[in-house]
Structures are given as structure tokens and as C-alpha cells.
Image (cartoon, rainbow, N blue to C red; front, side, top):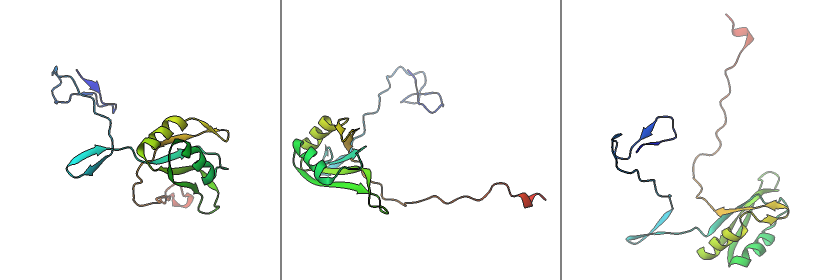
Length: 146
């Protein structure tokens, strides 16, 4: 029972045998696990990403909206470093996981200031080298013909 791997390489089988009748198990959704002692527990983050915000949104306004669903620990509206103007997204940290999941269900896709906001669990930020860019060079130079 082959399935396509989506990479154009053709079918693949979990046990490596293309003639196998064993059903292929679909991978389980990946969830972040936190270790406490010897047991592993899956937890929803209490930190939420709020996107597509109107640029006029304030921390006080967001706190008021999210406090309807539980206690809010912090609100951080992200601003441009150079201009100080809001960039259209924020992070809200709730006190409890249940409050965070309630806020996601209730607020994702709702209207705030004329825009449909996105509310999701915040992803961990990868600490790595920033920037990049550079490169350039190459191209056609008229004087390099001979």
C-alpha cells in the first residue's frame, strides 16, 4: 500500500518493502513536550501570538479583550525599532493554559478595529544568527569581454 511522499521520488513504504501489505501508519501530529521528572506531559503554551492587528492597537486594548477569557500576565505589542510604530502583531501571555485555549477558540478570526485578527499558540523563537543578506556580485560587466 504505497503512498506518495510529496517529493517526486515515488511511493515509499514504512517497512521498506514495496510489496508489503502492512498498512502505513500516518505520523502523529507533533506536539511540544515538557519533561517533569520521569513523565512527559503535553502542554499548551500560555503565550499567544496575535496577528493582523490594526496599527492603532494598544496593550491596554488587547489586555481588555483577552481578560474576558482569563487572567492576563503580560501583553507585548511589537514595534518597529527605528520608527517606534506598531508592526501589526503582539504576544499575550495568559495565566492558565485553559484561558489560553479559550482565547484562541473565541478570538481567532474575530474583528478588531476592522481587521480579522489571528490568534495562535506562540512558537518558540529559534535563537540563531540573524541577518543574512549580502551576496551580490556577478552579472555582466562590459569591460570583461576579452
